[in-house]
Image (tube, rainbow, N blue to C red):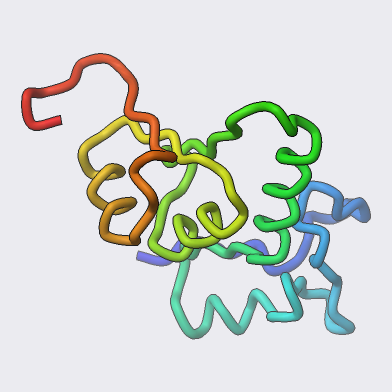
Length: 128
């Protein structure tokens, strides 16, 4: 099953501020993120598809660290976690907030430093 992809902003939406900073409108009206046309991603991977801009993620990590230099800034794994995301978060010096055994296992498999992980949440099983 395929889900319609937003390759063009809705009619009347000229403000792209809700998208990553690297979002651009291409000459034919479609959008690109990080210089990559979204319609090409949809053709290659189908839809729905997650599209992340590594530069944007890293920039936001740096912004949070600069705003809270004395705090232990954590990224919430429940928002989205993959090996690449774990690596970016690690390289930018953030901690990782995990709340399930799956998130913990993925972070461990990605080589995320355990001393910068925080496991929390309720309803944990003995395995968790």
